[in-house]
Each structure stands twice: as C-alpha cells, then as structure tokens.
Amino acid sequence: MSLRDKLTADLKDAMKAGEKKKVNTIRLMTSAIKEKDINSRTAGHDSELTNDAGILDVLTKMVKQRQDSIVAFDQGGRPELAHNEREEMDIIKSYMPKQMDDAEAKAAVADVIKAVGATSIKDMGKVMAELKAKFAGQMDMGKAGGIVKNLLG
Image 1 (cartoon, rainbow, N blue to C red):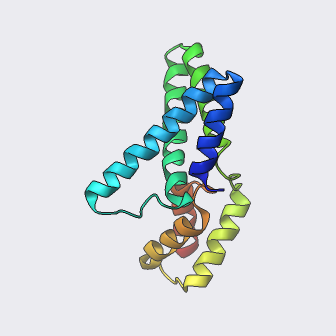
Image 2 (image 1 turned 135 degrees about the horizontal axis):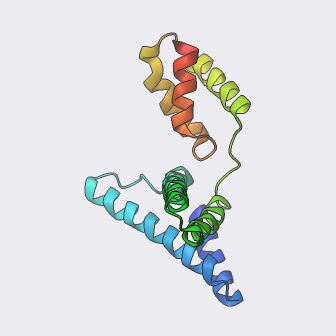
C-alpha cells in the first residue's frame, strides 16, 4: 500500500472514530502533498511525487516546521500551542520510517561513499543524491551533510 493510499484509508478511519486531531493533521498532510503536486506540475516535474520518497520529503519538512514552532512557542511562554504542535508532529512521524541514530547514519554514509567511489569533498553532491534516494525520511539530511564532510574532508 502506498503512503497516499494509507493516508486516505487512515483519514476515513479517523473520521469514523471521531479522532478530530488525527483528521485535521492528515488533512494538513494531504493538503501539503497536493500543493507540492500542483507546484511540481507547473514547474514541469510531473513525476516528483509519484513515489513515497517525494511524499516523505514533504512530511520531513512538515516535521521540521513543527520542531521550529515548538521552540518558538516554548520560548514565547505558550505551552498549549507547543503541545498542539507536538501532537501534530507525532501523528506526522507515525507515517515516516524510523529515524536512524548517529551511529547508523555514519555507517550508512560510509557505505554510500564507498559505493559511489567518492574520494574528496568535490564528490559530496553524488553522495548526498544517493543518500537522499536510499534513505529519504530515515535520516536528517542536514546532519548527513556534516557527516559526509567529516568523512571526505
């Protein structure tokens, strides 16, 4: 079952169960995916979201937005809003694969460096492209970039 189909099925189930928070969050997710679909089509990239990797990219950005909002709300003394963002983030994360810890990420980066034959920092683009293709949603690409730099530098 594709991620799109799972979201659609879960939306129906959440509506039947009366889970308002989950319904609202899934609607936010599908809305963001549809927006990305439309933007991709107008830019001429029709197949960008046809696979789960493109959808995981959208979900990863949504999680990052929630994390930034939580920090801002906590600093601003708005714990109820931070709690709301945490609940949404947990629902979004439930559709994403398990995140790699630092040791797993470092091992995966080392394997990809070896597989693509990267020898210097000039090959970072190849390594990052391969990491994004293989491990979309499983590792933070910002952290992965730092690991690649350390291993190649």
